[in-house]
Length: 456
Image 1 (cartoon, rainbow, N blue to C red):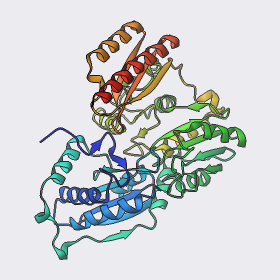
Image 2 (image 1 turned 30 degrees about the vertical axis):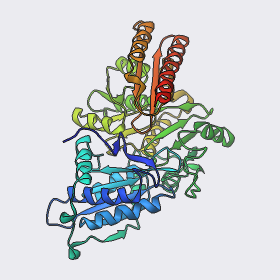
Image 3 (image 1 turned 90 degrees about the horizontal axis):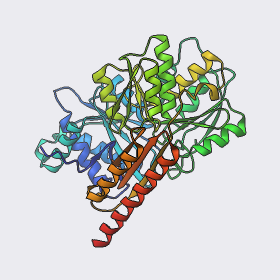
Image 4 (image 1 turned 180 degrees about the vertical axis):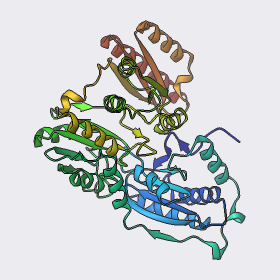
């Protein structure tokens, strides 16, 4: 089987809505192929489908539904719900497959499709390649006969089930009474459930980004625009701010002073808290190559190990499962707490931060600066066509940059799995050198990209 992934990236299929690959036709064929691949017996098979609040969800959802029905699967429609809720309901409803329609933190023009297996975990690269291969083959003779077509129905209490599961992750007997919390739902999938969970646990909730109209998801709000959250925290005198992204599998925190706290600091706080409580498993946590060296050093002082994977929360989750580790995540805020969820869940991670806040009765600004971050700089370079990273002079420049850091830091260059971007990151003890290294590499890569584009 070919190892080239034509449709699937690091987090499912993603693209501009109504353009290849995010068309109704491809969604239909994906539903048919995935439905056939996950039909493995004589019983009635089921797929659950959730979505965020994008306008194009009204196009993708019925196309997928038709495909699964044509493969003989019953479809349970969840409506707008966070990605982790879809993963949870895939397991609890004993479904054969789960689907989330979302482009996460991207603007409304984009959309995407994420697939979960029966255990609520994202599909492996191998399974996604199997689906692609089946989509490219002829399978019309394998579709369901007229009398064996599936049916579709909506699950009216889907949101309520997730709300109760989220509340159940909070320490028994603890409450959020007396805390003022801003929650920014990015006009996305968590716009109802996140404020409800916090309110039912006793907090005074200031909800923002909770008026989706199909176009405003992630627009000047959410985890990718933390300054909006920070301003609201200061404006309302809140104890904490929580910003989710469009599908709520990611979180950024702001303390009471309006300072941003990223996923690395949240990971450190949860790891230390669980380690002290004796509930951290596996002798460490899992993060990606993007996490700050300061996190690794801090964990080492606690006698814990930082396991690194390539970028993508499903790679983090896979390593957690194989290593018996129950805490992992990404600097960007995708945090996986496998005691409670099989995939990244921004709300559940925020609840664990709040649990420490309640237990220690200290300001968030004291609790959430867990370790000293090494200066780190990340910039993106957009390109067209073949990646400029293949050029010899770019590789030579990368080697020179690594030599300049002289063992006190590192350089990481990678291509985005969802966009035509090269991501350039460096970190080290000297912030000035780090910035110079990144800027010079970006200029070199941009020049190569321009030359290549002009030659086309």
